[in-house]
Structure formats: C-alpha cells, structure tokens
Amino acid sequence: MAFVDSYFSYVDHSGLLLAHIVLMTLAWFFILPITVMLSIARSRLALALQMAFLSMNAVALLLGTIYNSKTPDLYENNAHHKLGWAVTWIALVQAVLGLIRAYCGAGQVEYESPTLDYQKLQNIREVDSYRFSSDSGHGTDAASSRSSSTSSKRESEDEMENLQDSRGGGGEPSDVEKHGLMGNAAVDRFIVRKLSWITHSRALTWVDVIYTAVDRTILILGFVALASGIVTYGGIFRGNHVFGGMAHFVKGGIFLWYGLFSLGRCMGAFADLGWAWNVKPSASMVGSRKAAMPSAEFVESFLIFFYGASNVWLEHLAAWGGAWTAQDLEHVSITIMFFGGGL
Image 1 (cartoon, rainbow, N blue to C red):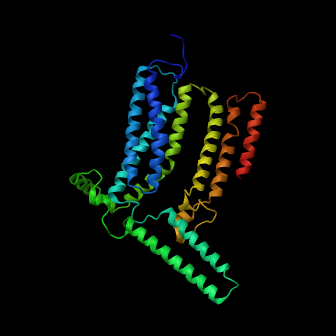
Image 2: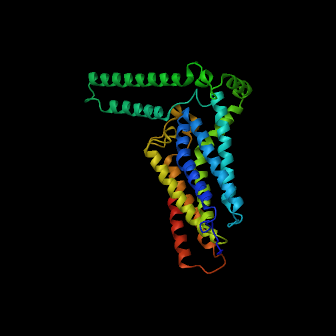
Image 3: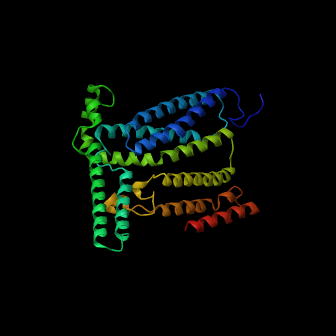
C-alpha cells in the first residue's frame, strides 16, 4: 500500500469518517445554533432540540471512535480528539443544567424580553420627539402631545406587565408543574422533590450563570473544534508550521465571528445589552449588571485589537532564529495596523 500521511488520503473505512463529518456538521452548524437561539429566547423547545443535538453528536462520536480503532494514527497528538471530547462534555453538562433550570424555574419568572427593552427605549425616544416637535409650542398641541405620549407609555407598560405575568410572574403554576418534562407525573414529581433544595439555595443562581455562559460561548468552542478537525483531516500544520496555521486560522476566525456579531446586531441580537442600537440603555431599564457592560463599539475595537496583538509574531515563529523574510515583515506590518486600529 502506498504511503499516506493524512486521513484525506487514507481510503480504508472512509465511509465511517464521512458519516462522522456529515453528522458533526449537521449537529454543530445547524441544530446547535437554532438550539442556542431558542435557549436565549427562553423557549420550551430549546431543551428538546438540545437532546436531539446531543443524540446526533453521540452517534457521530461513536462513528469517529470506531474509525479511529480501525485506522492508524496519522496525526499523532492532534488537538482535535482532545477538543472534541472537551466540548462534548461541556455540551452534556449544559444539558443537565438545562434540565435543572427547567424543573426549578430558573430564568423564567424575572425574565424580560430584549424586544421589550427595545420598545421601552423607543418609547423614551418617542416622548422626546413629541416634546421637541410640538407645533410652535402652542398649549393645545403640546398638551395633546404629552397626553398621547403618556397614554402610549401607559399602554406599553401595561403590555409588558401582561407579558411578564404570562411568563410566570403571576403566581400560576409553570408548564413543567402542570405537564412535566418526562410525560410521567410520578417521575416528574420524584425529580422535583430531589431538586427542591436547589430551588431555595444560591446553587440555582450558579446553575443559571454557568448555563448562560456556555450558551454564549458554545458555538465558538464548536467552531474551534471544527477548525482543528479540518487541520487533522488534511494533515497540515505539522511541527513549526503550526504557527503559520494559527496566524491564518486566528485571523479568519476573528473576521468570521466579527461578521456574525455585526449581522446579529443588525437583526436585534444582544438588545438586552444595548448592542442592537446606538443608545446605551440605563440601569433602570436593563439592570445594573447589563448597564455596566461595555458598548458594542468597544467590543468591535477589542476584536480588531485582539487580532493584531495575537498575530504580530506568529508568522515568524515558524522560522524563529532565522532571517526575516519579506512575507514576515508584510504580516507584521498588517498586524501592527490592526493593533493600533483597535486601540
């Protein structure tokens, strides 16, 4: 058999590897992003879709494990195998935390939709526009403007109160209490009893914090795992060439996620942090913690700065100790421009 140095060139049992790649792509690039969006929106469908993601990921992992057992190790000590298991365990822990949150009601009672934050901000701006666009300052027009803006604010506040009540703030039993997640009243009651101590302790706060943190970062972790899979599959960036590979993958990854970040802003994502518009919400509107978050412009500048700072020396590290080439100097000059631009 001819010598092969990559899984791409190795034809034996390639069907197992192809199935692994297809299932992982479907799970991490299609099912998981939808799951994250539903989770952020506090949808009851998020948990079911999360279980579907874990099931497909488990099948893909099984196929990958079988493939590895039948083939030689063509990329020794590669990062993909370690990263794959790490992100799988993180996703599994998040699913368990999601079950705990569902049974204990974390994040349901005092949740306020980012759309409501935006509506409240719009109401404030409308009040200001009514005040400054009153017809020549005549008393009748000014009074009618004030009355219309006041009634508009009142209607919006009533709608928000009604929506908050419908989300669980009115003391009604939740859907979990009425129907259960497992479809079995006895099983659901048993789980609720076992988790009752969490409901009345600070542990539930930590469960919610960890779950939310994973929610906001799991897609980036999946992207890193997928990128390492491409490297392992192609058998590239071995030895000192890893630095050149990191330089290009870090650059491409940052630009990709910067584009997705900007697209998300245009679609209204991160509205609860004030990143979906150019007006920073007050603490009374979104809470002191979210009001203290940096602005979207700061985040954009940090991404540009991070790319420049992390790539200054990576290209030359592949030939460290040797003479500087024109390509090295070209990369350094580009990264310094981004470094300064981010600052």
